[in-house]
Image (cartoon, rainbow, N blue to C red; front, side, top):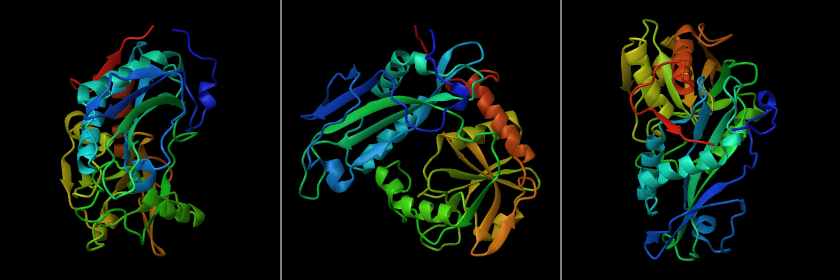
Length: 343
């Protein structure tokens, strides 16, 4: 498969249209067969449920070229399952897991020329999403929905390597107890936009959200889960019913335990103990791990000595091992890598 003539080393993390995308419509209680189309335009009613009451959800995953030339995706079954959980909470029809995986395979295969070559630092980012498409004026779920999936080549999230970021403790709440923080609903991200723009204007890269009930426990940022490394080498990640179950974080827990031999704790993390950790990072699909160098708590700074200039040593091992699994240089646990036949 001949690749597109793209300067892979210098593309950013943005949208670049590819040749085909997948579309399936839900009507009269059932999904149609779904098609690949060249049309990147969405046409819906002015009164569509997504426009009136934000009935929409999405996922994010990547396709890679491995060292031995295979085209693969990383744990797409977990994305399919998480979207099903989200749809249940938003009163949207579930898109079946096997259909989801088939759509991923089809979009990647149809856009194989856009899957960046191994070693370029770039990947094909995949965005599955669903929205209420039929008119809704009363406050209730839509009756018709559209599931779509497109791909766009993206460069590394960090140019020149993952430099430690600076974050602040946020005065706004990301999610309420018993709310929608545990699902990947578009409305969660809309609510975080004001806070992230404000953080950037004040010189910070991200927000640290605390639990809305007591504001004493660490939850997550606007789009990533936290991981911490203790001074005696334990891997710790916050546990809460309002944290999004990050696929990257769940994978890192396995890497920490089974590959690096670390003790893993998923538990409530109180903000008072953050100063005692040796390393801190944010994890997600886009960057895998973003090392945190500094947390600003209303003028008081918490600095992580192992991560002020570069990734801390344990975080670096976690990052290298997980990306090695994704790129085919480290043996993957069974079922983590899904190979896609192309060309």
